[in-house]
Image 1 (spheres, rainbow, N blue to C red):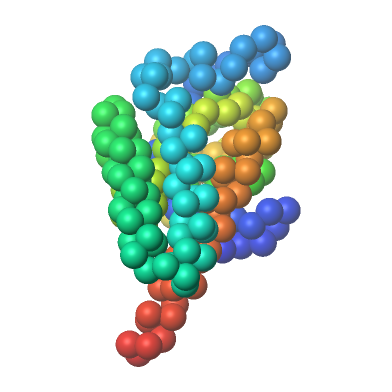
Image 2 (image 1 turned 90 degrees about the vertical axis):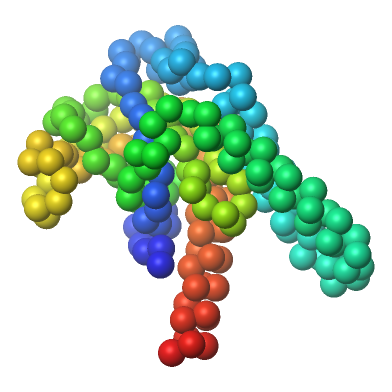
Length: 201
């Protein structure tokens, strides 16, 4: 089940692939975050495919109530969009390294193998929902700034692992909206899981 916390934003725990590059402060104004990664052209399609997937699911719920046959046809089309997105993600290197992180509209907390100084600017590459069968994955790049970084003390992972909290900066409205939609979808999935568990307990 996905843990939901409320601080400045809703935060959820999720399995997400995170890659980062330390950048210069000047890069935040003079470059885009995608310029700091070797991205395949297909990766840039993922945000739009994710948006279409989310919108299609919302429309499908309404159509299904009025026309089951049309709803079934559109559901099939939506499944194709999701399959295409997952096929794109499958071509990305190191996707299998997705790990448990905490994410909100405002930032992300994940494990790094190095101790990063507070206020260090980063370029981030995120692959969200890359192993789920419920909906398509979301891939995006953005800038962030380290808010805290401390050695991991829970005995898990490598002894040099650090828990690093990063605040998103200069996040464009489209990317923020897509992250928000992913969080809402995860919350809905968590509610369905609770209901299924309650029915079988």
